[in-house]
Length: 360
Image 1: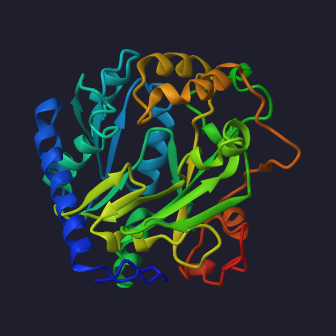
Image 2: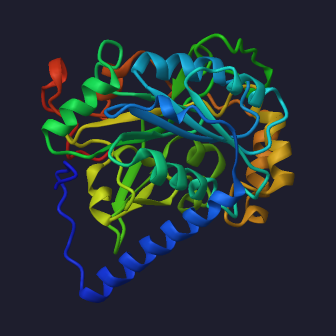
Image 3: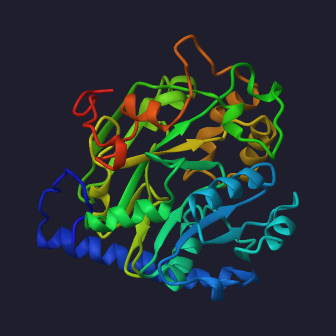
């Protein structure tokens, strides 16, 4: 079985294979044990049918984003949402309980100790996602792909299956407004990219890491603004959010990497021809200023939270992220033209990416 990539991962020694197998089993075991953290508030999993596309999300206090999140993903054809709430207090839980296609669990356990929620979602994927296409996204991520405006995730996954491909990767693209981030206004019933209309088209850099063969993409807005002096610490921007899941699979670092290692070869990064999408990252809505103050105190979003105090302080200073080089977002075809995603030969976007194999 192939992941559908143009990349061939280098062979491993028997010792490397053993260590990765052991690592995967440990991740699955801790995910299995994490089920004790979860309390089911609404179980509608009986509605899950074979062949459905399932979405898995961990969230906390995302009431501002949820109306458009559901509008976007229902339009793409998500059949059921399996969500873990980490003690929201802004109406998120009440909203989710009213949704007919949501199964909801809640926990007060540490998000960071659960590998930033990955343990909880892996358990749910083990139990409900085996043999199904699963989409793992945060509430501030909106997946777009070639022809997403006219073709559903069912169409995309059918095409991927015909190619014997079980992984679909994406670049996480930070979206931002023109003007100080905290001085904007946003209506939760509207598309957040109407406000967060801008992005950095370049530069992005990618490298493969050993021994898992996972891609590591960095660059873009947050490196330019917040990590210019320490680019090696800037956020990882590659994800493999859409996977035909098996209970033997495990995400290692959020959805940036996974085991078995062949899953990581399914995304080659920006500027390549392998089929891929973009996760429009809507982090910089106006609420980011106050949320950053809170998250600095909670210390749940980095392996070493104390080392990122300056980052939170910069966000709470209400920065203007826009520059004359910022690019105004139009549609998926623009992103493909810029080399940030690829149709990979699907449908009308079947022409070769003119940016393939060029540095971005």
